[in-house]
Length: 63
Image (cartoon, rainbow, N blue to C red; front, top):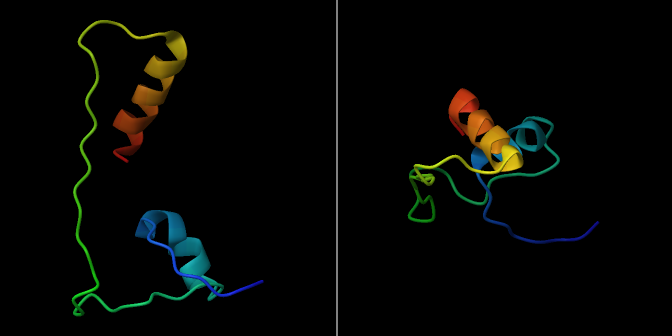
């Protein structure tokens, strides 16, 4: 219910973009489009069960 600008991953915004409840501020060709690569690292030893479960989600979904 207001105006604003946010920098969020396209994967999180896709449904809202398709529903036209939000719009992109810049096209890919503009200098405002920022490609990024996110890497996740974990300890070699076993983590607590909740952390292991979250890690498995990352691995399965390749988020």
